[in-house]
Amino acid sequence: MAKIRFIPIEKSIEAIADQKLLVAARKNNIPIRYGCASCRCGTCAVKISAPGAFQPMTSMESDLLSRMRLPITGEVRLACQARQTAQVDTSVDLSFQDTYSPDDGDGDGSI
Image (cartoon, rainbow, N blue to C red; front, side):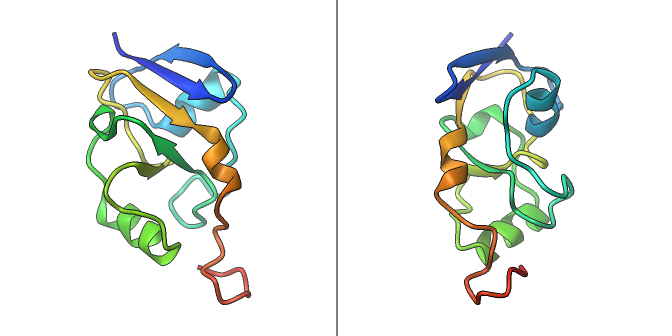
């Protein structure tokens, strides 16, 4: 079974096929930041080392990441949307959450 390593906290968990990354993190007491948990706020964006460890991005997820001015090539995913394939080991960089704001840049906090 594949492993997911969370950095910088250096905690690893076993990947479960089709489980959302946010659910896996919360079940294992991983301190991941999130808001709506439904692809509306962008708070749960994380950087991952192996995009192939997750199912392809939906258009809803890529649209939100685009509006946040974050890459949509797979290395950044919304933890509330990224479903694990459980076939590939990966690491999830939680410190990435400190490098962006879900604000769309116009100062009003909306996306």
